[in-house]
Structure formats: C-alpha cells, structure tokens
Length: 515
Image (cartoon, rainbow, N blue to C red; front, side, top):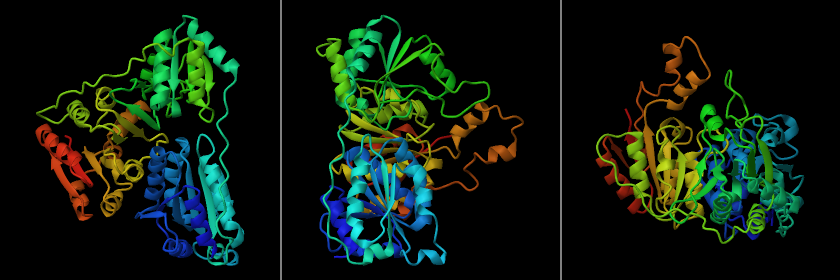
C-alpha cells in the first residue's frame, strides 16, 4: 500500500468521505488510490477556489470536514480566497496540497514555491509530510486539527514521492478535544448584567445561531428584556417558522452605531466585538458607544450551548416563552421587478427545510427581513468578505444535504469568480436553484465610492464598477454547461420560474434582469 492509499483509507476511516478536487501531476497517486478505496466521494471542480468554497459549504452543513485536493503552490493560491472565508467562519477543512517530490524541490522547477508560507495565513494548522510512512499519521493529525473547536483549516502538504512510495497503511484518528466549559463567574457576571435593568443586548454567533442556541437565547431575552441580535455576517442561522427570529447588526457604520447606541452591556455569545467592515474617513472602527461594557459569556471555541443552558437556569428562564416565529410567509409579488418584490416572492416560495446561500450582496437586501416567518430554513452567508463564495458554497451544501433543496441568491459580479460551479452542479445532479441578479454592475461599490468620500468621480472611475459593454448572458452561460436556465423581466415570470425550479429535481438558473 503506497502513501496515497494509506492517506485515503485514513481519511475515510476518520469520517472524511468527500473530497473536492482539481488535481495535477503531483496528485495522480492520490487520484489513482480513489479506485482502490471504497467510501470516498471525489467531486471534480474546474477551479481551485470552487474546491475550497465547496468544502466550506459542505462542512457548515455536515458539521464535519471535507477534504480538498489542490495542485502545488499555484493551485493553493487559486483557492486561498475561499480558504480565507472558511477561516473567518471557523470551518473545518482538510486541505491537501500536492508538491514536488522531496528530492526534486531543490532544482527550482517551474512550479516550485513556498507552499507552507502561502498556506500559513489561511490555515490554523500546516504540515508537510516528510516521507511515505508518515503520510497516514499526518492525515490523521490533520483531521483532528480541523475538528478542533470551533473548527479550522488544516493544510497537509503531500510531496509526490510520499504518495507513491510504500506507506504505513491507515492510521486511527484521535478524538478532537471537547469544547471547554465556561467558568461559573462568566455565568454569574452575565446574569448580573441581564438583571440590572440597564439596556443590554445579547450578540450571537457560531453555535448560538443554531436552533437550540436561539431557543435558549430567546427565553433569556424574553425573561430579562434584553435585545437579541446576530453578528452582521453569520456563518449559519436556523430561520423561519418555529425558530426564534433574530436580526443582524447592520453593515453600514451609521446604522450599526445607531442600533447599539445607549446600550450599557453587550453580551458576546460565540461572537466578537463588532467592528466596521472597512475604515471610513471620520467614522469610528468600533460600532458600540465608548461607555458600553462588553461581557463574554462564551467564545466561539468554548461550549456555547452549555453556557446558554446554565445562564438560562441561573435566570430561571428555561420555562419562559421563547417567542418562536409563526408560519406567515408574505404573498407573491407581481408587476415590475424590484428588490422588495423579489424578496417577498422568495420568502413566499422557500421550500420547507431549504438551505439558502446568500451572496446577493445588494440586489435582495430586504430578503432577510422578509423571510423571518417563512418555511423553516437554514441561511448561509459569507463571513470573510472575499466574494465568489456563493456558487461554490451552494455546491458543497447540496452535496452535504442531498435531501434538502438549496436556493442560491447570487449577485452577477461575484458569480463570475466561480461561474464554473454550474458545471459541477450539473455533473453531480445537485438540487440547486440559482437566482442570479443581473444589474450589470458592482452595485455595492457605487455606495462604497460615496462612503469613502472619493472626490471628482468621473467616467473612468464609474467604468470600473460597470459590467456592461459587453453584457453577460448568464442564462446562456448556464445552458452552455448543460443547465436549465431562464431569463425573467417581470415578477409574474419570476414567480413561475422560481416555483418550477424549486419543484424540479436537479440544478437550474434564473437570471433576473434588474434595471
């Protein structure tokens, strides 16, 4: 058994049974090993950023890591943007990167690079296997590292000769350390703030936004009168009927400052102190008032759910009504296409138990508010800010949850970073409905141009935000990759196509023309 087969068998035995791959020469022994090992699903993607983004979406929904397979330093570089997003979301990924054979690296061949140096800023754990007998053990260590709370990218670099030489056979994977329980002082300090009668907010992130966490936080806030809010960009929220509704802290600095104004205490539950996404002239970086006290009930790597359970018991809030949402979706919108109309129809037609992947950016800004009492669904969003994650993340989520429909809300500009995802969705027969908003621009950047105070803006600057000349035929691109697609220009057409897409197995794309 060579090193590559030893590694694949270790991955499968350790629960890593899905690999998103764009391999090259150095990874061919890993590819060949797939035919000798049952239990590993290997998904071909046409760009490395799709592999890393799909692994992110898979792990968010499966609650376990997928593997990636990337080709040397340049392949890793192509995947780094979505590894950045995964790192910010604390997503567990076993990121396997091939390298030249150990004896070949000293010759500085064309693809030679510092892979460890490139991987380090985007990984919580980085290691290069020194020889074939160590590959399986290193793979087991990578799985354990990826699963370490709250989750991280573990990059294993695999020189070609460590794959083709004789290996050790599979190695058992050690259990990841359990999440640490927070101290009783954290519970009592938080309870004291919540009992104070002073304006207080619980700001949720991570596991606190799952169904049990929301239920507990909802009871605590209902009992104490505290406000309840999510961090601006959550990795995953359970939403809709039967779940406690929670708003996100607004993205614009002025709105966020206004939302947090007057609060005496902000309790962080799996979240961090809120800061502005960017620096702006004459605006603060911190969103809360200077006299606001921050208390950390539980950090993201700690046992957040246990902390909420104990806090609810401390406050005698377990039996208090949690104020879960009732099913009352809005009616279908008709007439001209607007952002509000699109949001209403989307919220009305979300299927029960759907997964919504939102990278619409500006086009469906009102969707989140409109869908709080829709059918129960899971909502995924980009936490790292590097655009181009939506389509890959939808791909990974659909593979993790084959029995759940996936609805990808996608901006036109960011779709072009990974439009090849559609090919993989067709090849794998994934149940994904992509709603692509075509406004022929980087619309959000028009707002940012004003926000940063740029002066004397003229045609050259505006051309950098324009996606016309030529116009992109997104429905045509989808069809060229074998996908059913339609272009709509009215809400009545949109309602028909969305209902058809969501009720028909397999992937489709609906291009929404926004003027």
